[in-house]
Length: 279
Image (cartoon, rainbow, N blue to C red; front, side, top):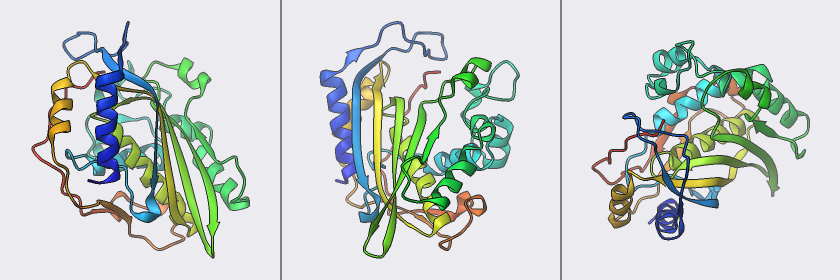
């Protein structure tokens, strides 16, 4: 059992045994029914990527390729346009969050990155002084959130620090998430931000270090309890999945492509489970 599988099962048990039910939930299912959830607050996990610990479960297949493509849409294209995500990357499950303009998710995610030059500022800050403690991506910009409709960012902040061990420099990353669907999105969000961490590290020729993951509200929706029991009963794979970024050290952040990522030793338990998303 991998560290990610162990944490996954512990979180599911904690939510089912100790969680409380939401009230006046905002999300709803496609049939219009309110999507309540059972949740805990204050979930934290630590993975040492340099030692081969990756936050991806083997208990069910996770769409890592699509998750990584979202990162390119947000941080390379710096876009909020659904057509870019669908036509350029073939990722098609965001359309439920299109706003009244019919083609964007509002002033959110990539549009915020572009407006505030977030990636350019982050890379410039790390280049000027890798040891500074101000390397922060913050998508929770109140002016943006008030300017249009749209889904409020879930994974809204990440922070980056370097460590020198011997002659090697390691880049650590911390992801902070206000809300997370434990069974559907947990490992998607974690792995896509590990991918972003790897892209930034490659840009500077550094090693990838530790990944810290904090979630404020970690939940299981009320139509997923059977799937939760199924996941608890599954026996995970014995292999440790490994995500690799096959480009030379020093490759410019904006020259990296989704196809440069390779996920090795990933043999998740099947069949895939079905989840009705709350929107």
